[in-house]
Image (cartoon, rainbow, N blue to C red; front, side):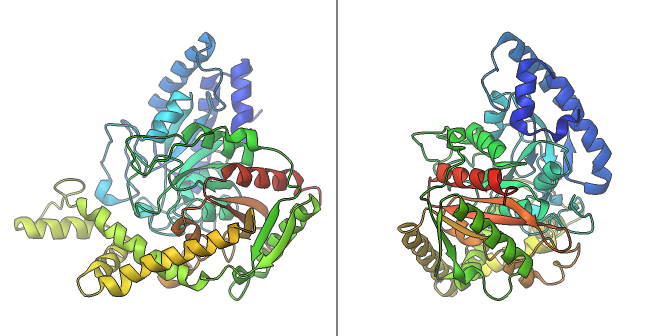
Length: 481
């Protein structure tokens, strides 16, 4: 039995019943990583000694009955390398943080450890989460397990590829403009971006603070719900963290969408969308309709303004957040320099990659005197209008259906030559972050080249249960049509 082919919930059930030990599960994950990493390169750091030590401790707790209740007890979980882990390097896939070892765990990592999960290692990503292909990492590219000549998406490409390749049953990513949903679609796994504030960002190295959100990546909707149930909680160390009345997300997993009102934004299905992707989304809508949902098209509006507003706001916040990495307070310091100013200049020049520098310069420009009103303030007003468009839509619909990306995974190297084209590939995901909404990408078939297609479902704020129920119903019935 290949333990890494089991879902996280199923693996944990076998561990808790005594059929499999925690150490056997951890070693199966480490062996899968050894077998596949040469081709996939999903990981930046793996702490084998630490993994086996964690496995031994969790096994003792399970045998004593202290860790029997959690849905992820004993399950190996991979963590995106922009989430802090005590004693394990957290590099953000950047040379400037190549030797940073945090002295604390992010809130989500602590929640996972408390639930008995095993932190297997840190996954590759676009540098500081800036990119859509996991090709801007200072540690080399990650390849898509579905076809190694293609990218896995970004910026959580390593986390998605690790799950798709069977190296771990589930992982954590972060989503600033679609960084969980887009690579999940490209790799054929399920990824959830929760409502902003549902999961603590304490310990997440910030890219765009008003947009970033940590979320689960797994093989199916059930594992996503289980992982979200573990990591979601109110955290006093994060001022944007929200206290919810109910965190039992697994209770939403019901095969029932009768009476659900589903809207399809017709402005998402115009020019630029691949025909294969369009057909798979419409087929998914038919499945929900056959289960009793009421599906109709409508005009969402403001779609063409989402990309410029997102990149102005995200770049402005990035230029501010990355100011601290200067070779003095944090980060790599150049070995040769003359004076303080030269040291700052050379450290940041040598430490940051081209895409990060591009966004820092763009962000500094839109925040500069004379341009703030023309760009940044206008982008904030556009953000408010986009949120209003969604609020209007959710007065009529429970769920919105959309593509996760205009196309399936491009070939390696095809996107980096044209950054603007790469930015436009985020057109169906960035609005969700600007409005703070929850969204999920679920596999919904393949294109003519055999590459996975992702179906994105979007719900109103704090309606994760409706989102999970709809995704679960689709998942249970997609093979029956």
